Amino acid sequence: MSFNIGGQNSIILKEGTSRSQGREAQNANIQAAMIIAETIRSSLGPKGMDKMLVDGFGDVTISNDGATILDEMEVQHPAAKMMVEVAKTQDDEVGDGTTTAVVLAGEMLSKALALMNKDVHPTQIIDGYASAGEKALEFLQKIALKVTPTDKTMLKKVASVALASKLLAEQKEYIADIAVSAVLQVAEKSGTSYRADVDDIKVEKKPGGSLTDTVLIQGVLLDKEVVHPGMPKRVENSKIVLLNCPIEVEKTEFDAKLNIENPNQMKGFLDEEEKMLKDMVNKIASVGANVVVCEKGIDDVAQHFMAKKDILAVRRVKQSDMEKLAKATGGRIVTNVEDLKSSDLGHAKLTEERKVSDDKMTFVEGCKNPKAVSILVRGGTERVTDEAERAIHDALCVVRDVVVDPRVVAGGGAAETEVAKQLRTYSQKLTGKEQLAVQAYAEALEAIPLTLAENAGMDPINALMELRSKHQAKQRWAGIDPIKGKVNDLSKLNVFEPLVVKMQAIKSAGEAAGMILRIDDVIAASKSAGAGGPKRPEDSAKEEGEGE
Ligand SMILES: Nc1ncnc2c1ncn2[C@@H]1O[C@H](COP(=O)(O)OP(=O)(O)OP(=O)(O)O)[C@@H](O)[C@H]1O
Ligand SMILES: [Mg+2]
Image 1 (cartoon, rainbow, N blue to C red):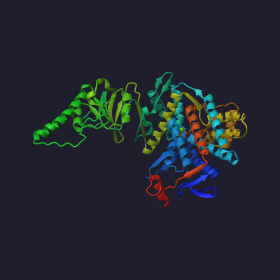
Image 2 (cartoon, rainbow, N blue to C red):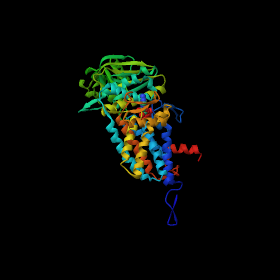
Image 3 (cartoon, helix red, strand yellow):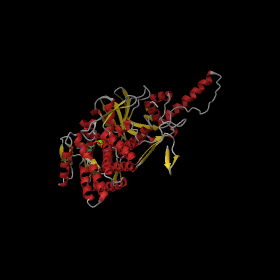
Image 4 (cartoon, rainbow, N blue to C red):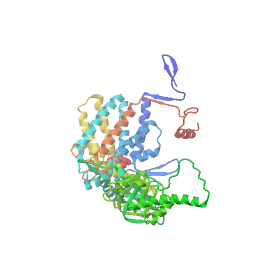
């Protein structure tokens, strides 16, 4: 690409590089980001629709989850990709509100575009948005309600709201109960507050049965069967050995050659191997174990000896499951059979292999005060269990959010409308373009109630006007009730969401909007990396499509 400097054409960038600058670049970026927001806004709220996504292999995903939809869309445009990241950050940080965050970011950008058309410079918008964002977080924290972190009724309300917009809406009461019990089970008190990690909750799905067959297991569920047919399938009062070494005779790392001259030598050799395996099994039995869970392999001969001693064993268990088992049963993962002590054993009331649909799974249940639990998700088809798993993830996350930071706000756009109102009052103190930017930000927040109303088939403008006047009349939790299709007091309807979900949505939307607005120059290298240059698979796929 050539640049004209002082009347001379200088070539600076590689041939084929494309460049767009100034308003052209800004417009293109903003449009791309807005398209993303536009795509998923119809899935917001309990009356939102789902999306069906078909990938390159023809695999179908049906989802309402913002992060999942965007992830499956395989977006190409760089600015649009930033919106996908907004959803991802929201998902990683708080687990819910991904659609909200993207809709907010899109609306902030569309309002910014309108301001730019009125000759407000992007930097003024960025500054205005930044101060509005800070104020919004402050107002949000002021209006939030403090709750008790272990208040099951409140936690259940929050979980139900997260599930309300998903496929499981019908069964939300049932699933919400499971989510609350699971999180409270793994939560730990530290000082005056609580800690909880949703990674300690194993979600295993098996198509078959119905969604209400989904169960919480006080322990860990392994998608593995018992290794040997001669072993017991059910061991009560289990004393469990957790091993991360194989129960096999170690092979030498280098090639060794053994010259065997007669059958006796051969037998001696095999006998020795067998003895080593037998010793390992004897050691396991000597500490009183009746269940072996091994991360690596278990030799056939060792399996046979274990079966004789009535030991139940499973092998090739995932490392993450081993860690969960340690937390659930109070056992310690041992790296060498020789070091095994009875104090390393984990305890559970029952270890049992059961048939779930066509597969056999091993349940380690009834652990004493388990700090890791499992949820077995059931549902008609694989697509149902997939989407149910994502919904349960959202429910677990919101319950965790409230247990860790026990503050909530009412949903249905009530919190957003209230913050928008307070931002408008605050903007009165400002002047000029900053004031315009703060007001634009406030309007962007109202995209949430507006979209909820739209998706519920209400007249969005009328609904927003009614909402604004109710908030002026100090009805703080007036919001959209999509079920009844009218404006209502959402706190009376028990629609509560974690404060952190709303705060994170505002933070990540604001950051993404600011970042996109700041770009006034897009320099893109040509798609093919040149002769011999590295190619990414997505690029070559695109080139083929374009027939270049
Ligand atoms: N019963 C309800 N009445 C009113 N509003 C509700 C109700 N249930 C949920 N909502 C609102 O719906 C919105 C959440 O919708 P949804 O779950 O589709 O999107 P999200 O949480 O932003 O993103 P995602 O769940 O895809 O990560 C929130 O604003 C919430 O307050
Ligand atoms: Mg949600």
